[in-house]
Length: 525
Image (cartoon, rainbow, N blue to C red; front, side, top):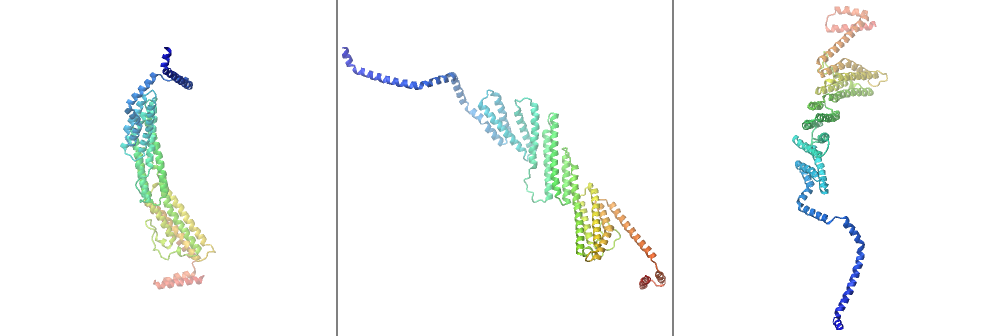
């Protein structure tokens, strides 16, 4: 029965055997794979032991889910730096400052050093620097007083944001306020030195200088007024003194730069009228700066007085050099024509400072030289500065001494025996020019200078003294001549005197008497 049962179930036994063989083979493969994985099991166990527990992983998962629910709020937080940047570029200072202030709030709330929040705060801080640069750049432009107040208010709020959470707030505030004043003056300096947009090339050099002075005056006074209005209401005495000293230093530096510019411009001037206009503009500028404690009128005198003296003396030097060149050319050529004129000047009773002496018409070189001196005096008529009176008098004395030395040198040269050409006429012309210079030219020019300086009485007195001196010299020469004639009196003179007593007083008789007298003197000699 058992055999019949096994025979009838032989297929089952075969299947069981086959499955046992397959199972053994599968187990062998599993053992091989386990042997391959077995070295990594210790590492996994170590990781699991060192890593977070399932509770912690669950907590992190919960946090992430909560973060996902706050996605929109987090997105707004991450967009704060770009939003602040847009506000800065759109000049929305209040909104930008609100974002910067919110960054401080975030920093106080998140004390657990959240990386995302810290990065957002850092980006907002960088935008704060951009905001500060943008505000300072606004100060470098032409802005009105309300706009300037708006910019400075924003900068002060920015400083207060930076001061949140700091120690020694008062000291830091004073330092930031001083730094703000320096930044303000430096930015406004940039605007002051910027050239205007209007094209003034069509203007002349004098008008351009006046326009520059007026623009400089307006801008400097505007900056000083803005500084006093904004920073002059400081709370502490120390800050007030530092503000005043800083403004004083800035005004002193700007005045120094202005005077340097004016000096270079004045040295290029050749017209006393433009010089006068520039002086008036500078004096008005100094009067305006006096309200800010920067009156520099006393510093203008050296600049304009030296230039005015130079303008006048240059005319004199040009006339003297022309005279010297003319005398040299005539000596070398041996001609007297350019030195003497054939026109006879009418005899004048005296010299007057109101008009040139007509005796100079007979000496063209001296007349041209006198015209040069008068041209210099005409420059004084346009711009007369009291402090140059003594300087001009001394310069005139030196110039006239130079002219006299030139004439004396010319006279010595023409008296040399080796002179060629019209030697005798050149000698007579040189002697005549010396006499005219001493008796007419020198006193006239001296008196004319006094008249040009406004001292009419002294000018006329000088001329009258010279006229009296010339008349006394002529009278002395006549007396000497009469004495010599009396000493040389001969018998022929007695005959002449006796003869004239019996001759009628007609002109023909007088002429005959003079002829007889001359003949008698020749016979006696």
